[in-house]
View: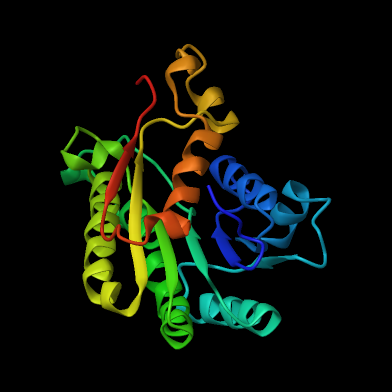
Length: 236
Protein backbone atom coordinates (compact mmCIF):
# COMPACT_ATOMS: atom_id res chain seq x y z
CA UNK A 1 0.00 0.00 0.00
CA UNK A 2 2.88 2.36 0.70
CA UNK A 3 5.91 2.92 2.85
CA UNK A 4 5.22 4.87 6.04
CA UNK A 5 8.79 4.85 7.34
CA UNK A 6 8.95 8.65 7.23
CA UNK A 7 5.46 9.14 8.71
CA UNK A 8 4.18 9.71 12.24
CA UNK A 9 0.88 7.90 12.84
CA UNK A 10 -1.31 8.56 15.88
CA UNK A 11 -3.79 5.78 16.71
CA UNK A 12 -6.45 6.38 19.36
CA UNK A 13 -8.11 3.39 20.96
CA UNK A 14 -4.87 1.57 20.15
CA UNK A 15 -5.26 -1.12 22.81
CA UNK A 16 -8.68 -2.26 21.59
CA UNK A 17 -9.37 -5.13 19.24
CA UNK A 18 -9.51 -2.97 16.11
CA UNK A 19 -6.83 -0.63 17.38
CA UNK A 20 -4.32 -3.45 17.73
CA UNK A 21 -5.00 -4.52 14.14
CA UNK A 22 -4.33 -0.96 12.96
CA UNK A 23 -1.14 -0.82 15.04
CA UNK A 24 0.10 -4.08 13.50
CA UNK A 25 -0.50 -2.72 10.01
CA UNK A 26 1.46 0.49 10.51
CA UNK A 27 4.23 -1.31 12.39
CA UNK A 28 4.70 -3.52 9.36
CA UNK A 29 4.84 -0.39 7.21
CA UNK A 30 7.64 1.09 9.33
CA UNK A 31 5.75 4.09 10.73
CA UNK A 32 6.62 5.97 13.88
CA UNK A 33 3.67 5.38 16.18
CA UNK A 34 1.92 7.20 19.00
CA UNK A 35 -0.41 4.66 20.62
CA UNK A 36 -3.16 6.37 22.57
CA UNK A 37 -5.66 4.87 25.00
CA UNK A 38 -7.28 5.72 28.31
CA UNK A 39 -4.77 4.20 30.75
CA UNK A 40 -1.10 3.27 31.04
CA UNK A 41 -2.11 -0.14 32.38
CA UNK A 42 -4.18 -0.94 29.32
CA UNK A 43 -1.46 0.21 26.93
CA UNK A 44 1.32 -1.66 28.69
CA UNK A 45 -0.76 -4.85 28.70
CA UNK A 46 -1.56 -4.56 25.00
CA UNK A 47 1.95 -3.55 23.92
CA UNK A 48 4.50 -5.09 26.31
CA UNK A 49 7.11 -5.20 23.55
CA UNK A 50 6.67 -1.66 22.28
CA UNK A 51 9.61 -0.28 20.29
CA UNK A 52 10.90 2.49 22.54
CA UNK A 53 12.69 4.28 19.72
CA UNK A 54 9.86 4.50 17.20
CA UNK A 55 6.78 4.20 19.44
CA UNK A 56 5.34 6.01 22.43
CA UNK A 57 2.45 4.93 24.62
CA UNK A 58 0.23 7.86 25.58
CA UNK A 59 -2.67 7.67 28.00
CA UNK A 60 -5.35 10.34 27.97
CA UNK A 61 -9.06 11.01 28.32
CA UNK A 62 -10.17 11.77 24.78
CA UNK A 63 -13.46 13.19 26.07
CA UNK A 64 -11.50 15.96 27.82
CA UNK A 65 -10.15 18.82 25.71
CA UNK A 66 -7.38 19.51 28.22
CA UNK A 67 -6.25 15.89 28.53
CA UNK A 68 -6.28 15.41 24.76
CA UNK A 69 -4.33 18.62 24.17
CA UNK A 70 -1.66 17.63 26.69
CA UNK A 71 -1.33 14.16 25.13
CA UNK A 72 -1.01 15.44 21.58
CA UNK A 73 1.43 18.15 22.60
CA UNK A 74 3.53 15.36 24.11
CA UNK A 75 3.38 13.48 20.80
CA UNK A 76 4.37 16.59 18.86
CA UNK A 77 7.18 17.22 21.31
CA UNK A 78 8.54 13.73 20.70
CA UNK A 79 8.09 13.41 16.92
CA UNK A 80 7.63 17.01 15.75
CA UNK A 81 4.70 16.27 13.45
CA UNK A 82 1.52 14.22 12.94
CA UNK A 83 1.11 12.81 9.45
CA UNK A 84 -1.80 10.45 10.09
CA UNK A 85 -4.49 10.52 12.76
CA UNK A 86 -6.51 7.31 13.00
CA UNK A 87 -9.40 7.99 15.38
CA UNK A 88 -10.19 4.38 16.30
CA UNK A 89 -11.43 4.96 19.87
CA UNK A 90 -15.17 4.48 20.32
CA UNK A 91 -17.85 2.63 22.20
CA UNK A 92 -21.20 0.88 21.81
CA UNK A 93 -24.17 0.29 24.07
CA UNK A 94 -27.80 -0.43 23.30
CA UNK A 95 -30.97 -1.37 25.09
CA UNK A 96 -32.78 1.92 25.74
CA UNK A 97 -35.65 3.33 23.71
CA UNK A 98 -35.18 6.98 22.77
CA UNK A 99 -37.76 8.12 25.34
CA UNK A 100 -35.95 6.11 28.02
CA UNK A 101 -32.40 7.17 27.13
CA UNK A 102 -30.51 8.25 30.22
CA UNK A 103 -28.18 11.21 30.39
CA UNK A 104 -25.44 8.74 31.31
CA UNK A 105 -25.88 6.73 28.09
CA UNK A 106 -26.21 9.80 25.89
CA UNK A 107 -23.21 11.56 27.37
CA UNK A 108 -21.04 8.43 27.28
CA UNK A 109 -21.65 7.70 23.60
CA UNK A 110 -21.64 11.27 22.31
CA UNK A 111 -18.51 12.10 24.27
CA UNK A 112 -16.55 8.98 23.35
CA UNK A 113 -17.64 8.66 19.73
CA UNK A 114 -18.06 12.30 18.76
CA UNK A 115 -16.50 14.78 21.16
CA UNK A 116 -13.26 12.78 20.99
CA UNK A 117 -13.00 13.63 17.28
CA UNK A 118 -13.47 17.32 17.94
CA UNK A 119 -10.87 17.19 20.72
CA UNK A 120 -8.24 15.39 18.63
CA UNK A 121 -8.91 17.68 15.66
CA UNK A 122 -8.33 20.74 17.84
CA UNK A 123 -4.68 19.73 18.26
CA UNK A 124 -3.90 17.59 15.20
CA UNK A 125 -5.36 19.86 12.52
CA UNK A 126 -3.29 22.95 13.43
CA UNK A 127 -0.15 20.78 13.31
CA UNK A 128 -1.15 19.42 9.90
CA UNK A 129 -1.94 22.91 8.61
CA UNK A 130 1.50 24.07 9.70
CA UNK A 131 3.26 21.19 7.96
CA UNK A 132 1.04 21.53 4.87
CA UNK A 133 -0.47 18.03 4.73
CA UNK A 134 -2.13 15.29 6.73
CA UNK A 135 -4.55 12.38 6.78
CA UNK A 136 -7.41 11.85 9.22
CA UNK A 137 -9.44 8.65 9.33
CA UNK A 138 -12.50 8.35 11.57
CA UNK A 139 -14.74 5.40 12.38
CA UNK A 140 -18.50 5.66 11.83
CA UNK A 141 -20.70 2.58 11.42
CA UNK A 142 -22.39 0.72 8.60
CA UNK A 143 -25.56 0.72 10.70
CA UNK A 144 -25.64 4.50 11.19
CA UNK A 145 -27.25 5.24 7.82
CA UNK A 146 -30.71 4.53 9.31
CA UNK A 147 -32.39 4.28 12.68
CA UNK A 148 -32.86 1.04 14.58
CA UNK A 149 -34.78 0.27 17.74
CA UNK A 150 -32.90 0.54 21.03
CA UNK A 151 -29.78 2.05 19.43
CA UNK A 152 -30.73 5.71 19.24
CA UNK A 153 -27.82 7.25 21.14
CA UNK A 154 -25.23 5.03 19.45
CA UNK A 155 -26.56 5.66 15.95
CA UNK A 156 -26.81 9.39 16.60
CA UNK A 157 -23.19 9.49 17.73
CA UNK A 158 -21.93 7.55 14.72
CA UNK A 159 -24.05 9.56 12.30
CA UNK A 160 -22.42 12.65 13.84
CA UNK A 161 -19.00 11.11 13.14
CA UNK A 162 -19.91 10.84 9.45
CA UNK A 163 -21.19 14.42 9.20
CA UNK A 164 -18.22 15.82 11.13
CA UNK A 165 -15.83 13.93 8.85
CA UNK A 166 -17.52 15.26 5.71
CA UNK A 167 -17.51 18.79 7.13
CA UNK A 168 -13.83 18.60 8.04
CA UNK A 169 -13.06 17.29 4.56
CA UNK A 170 -14.82 20.27 3.01
CA UNK A 171 -12.96 22.66 5.30
CA UNK A 172 -9.51 21.15 4.87
CA UNK A 173 -9.29 19.63 1.38
CA UNK A 174 -7.73 22.77 -0.15
CA UNK A 175 -5.06 22.61 2.58
CA UNK A 176 -3.92 19.13 1.43
CA UNK A 177 -5.50 17.42 4.43
CA UNK A 178 -7.63 14.38 3.61
CA UNK A 179 -10.45 13.50 6.01
CA UNK A 180 -12.38 10.27 5.41
CA UNK A 181 -14.15 7.62 7.44
CA UNK A 182 -14.81 3.91 7.46
CA UNK A 183 -18.18 2.29 8.15
CA UNK A 184 -17.63 -1.21 9.56
CA UNK A 185 -20.26 -3.77 10.41
CA UNK A 186 -19.58 -6.16 13.31
CA UNK A 187 -15.84 -6.47 13.86
CA UNK A 188 -14.34 -9.84 14.76
CA UNK A 189 -12.84 -8.98 18.14
CA UNK A 190 -12.65 -11.03 21.36
CA UNK A 191 -15.14 -8.68 23.04
CA UNK A 192 -17.72 -9.15 20.28
CA UNK A 193 -17.23 -12.91 20.24
CA UNK A 194 -17.81 -13.04 23.99
CA UNK A 195 -20.97 -10.95 23.75
CA UNK A 196 -22.38 -12.92 20.76
CA UNK A 197 -21.04 -16.48 21.19
CA UNK A 198 -23.62 -18.07 18.88
CA UNK A 199 -22.93 -15.81 15.90
CA UNK A 200 -21.23 -16.88 12.69
CA UNK A 201 -17.85 -15.20 13.18
CA UNK A 202 -16.78 -16.01 9.62
CA UNK A 203 -19.14 -13.30 8.35
CA UNK A 204 -17.67 -10.58 10.53
CA UNK A 205 -15.05 -8.09 9.40
CA UNK A 206 -11.55 -8.88 10.62
CA UNK A 207 -9.42 -6.09 12.13
CA UNK A 208 -6.70 -6.69 9.54
CA UNK A 209 -9.24 -6.19 6.74
CA UNK A 210 -10.25 -2.85 8.20
CA UNK A 211 -6.58 -1.99 8.69
CA UNK A 212 -6.01 -2.39 4.96
CA UNK A 213 -8.71 0.19 4.24
CA UNK A 214 -7.35 2.57 6.87
CA UNK A 215 -3.90 2.07 5.36
CA UNK A 216 -5.19 3.07 1.93
CA UNK A 217 -6.84 6.21 3.31
CA UNK A 218 -3.60 7.10 5.11
CA UNK A 219 -1.48 6.61 2.01
CA UNK A 220 -0.58 8.88 -0.89
CA UNK A 221 -2.84 6.73 -3.07
CA UNK A 222 -5.88 8.41 -1.47
CA UNK A 223 -4.75 11.96 -2.28
CA UNK A 224 -7.91 12.64 -4.33
CA UNK A 225 -10.32 11.13 -1.76
CA UNK A 226 -12.08 13.62 0.53
CA UNK A 227 -15.11 13.09 2.76
CA UNK A 228 -15.68 9.50 1.70
CA UNK A 229 -17.49 7.00 3.90
CA UNK A 230 -16.34 3.50 3.01
CA UNK A 231 -18.55 0.56 4.08
CA UNK A 232 -16.44 -2.39 5.22
CA UNK A 233 -18.93 -5.13 5.98
CA UNK A 234 -17.39 -8.47 5.03
CA UNK A 235 -20.11 -11.08 4.50
CA UNK A 236 -22.56 -9.66 7.05
